[in-house]
Amino acid sequence: MITVYGVIGFPVGHSVSPAMHNAAFEALGMDCTYQAFEVKGERLQEAITGAKCLGFGGLNVTIPHKEAVIKFVKPDPVAAEIGAANTIDFKKMMAFNTDAPAAVDALRDNGVEIAKKNVLVLGAGGAARAVVYGLLKGRASVTIANRTPAKAADLASYMRARGDVFGTSFEGLPDKVRMADIIVNTTPVGMKWEDKPLVTRDMLDKTQAVFDLVYRPVETPLLKEAKAAGAKTVDGVSMLARQGARSFEIWTGVKPPLDVMERSARDAL
Image 1 (cartoon, helix red, strand yellow):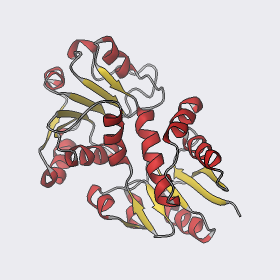
Image 2 (cartoon, helix red, strand yellow; image 1 turned 30 degrees about the vertical axis):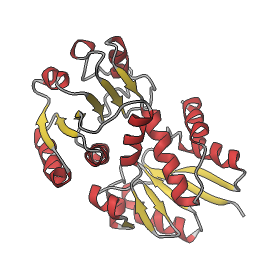
Image 3 (cartoon, helix red, strand yellow; image 1 turned 90 degrees about the vertical axis):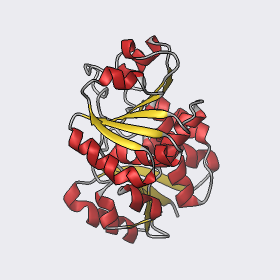
C-alpha cells in the first residue's frame, strides 16, 4: 500500500517539494508518494484531521500556516520555542520545525561559519523566526532589520533569552550591511523579476556572505549583487533541500539522499 505525504499551504501550485521528495522515494525504492494540497486558513484543522484519518504518513506545512498549525498539533520543544512548525508526523502526532536547522546547515555546507559572527537578518516574519532561532543557537550575534521596526523589536525581544539579538529599522541600511559578516534575506523581495534588491553591490565586499531564502528565481537580484561584489552566496534551494531532508527523516526514519533532493529541486525550478 502506498503511503501518502504532502505539503499544505495557500497557494502551493509553485511548490517544488513534490519533485524533491518523490525523487528521494524513487532513489530509495520506497512505496510512497508526495503531493501538494491547497488549503485555506479556515480549513487547516479539517485538512490535518482528514489527512490523519486517511492514513497519511506526514505533512509539510508552508505559508501561511506555519504559526497556526501549532494550535492544532502539539509542537516539539524547538517548534514551541520558535512559535512555528513546518512538519507534521502523524505517527507521533507532533509538529516540528526543520527550517531553523536547515538554515544553519545551508550556510555551513556552503562554507559559511556562523559562530561569533555578526548576522544581519532582513525581515521579521515567520521565516525570520526560524532563521533567527537557528543562528542564535549557533552562537551568532543577530540584528533583525524590518520596514516596520516594531516587528523587528518584538521578534528580538521574544528571542533575547536565546542569545545576542537586536531589532532595528531599514533606516541607515547600508551602514548596517557593512557591519555584518553575513546578510540573510527572509523577505519575499526578489520573487518578482522587477524587484529591486534591498542590498546592492556598493554595500558589500568579498569578506561577506549573502544568503537569500527566496528560491524562485534561484539567482535572485540580491545574489546577483552579492556576486558582483565578490561576496560568497548561498541560495534558497540549499535551505529548501535541507529542510525537506530533515522532514523526510522524521517521517521515515531514513536519511534521504540530499544530493538527489537538491538536484531535483533545482531541475524543477
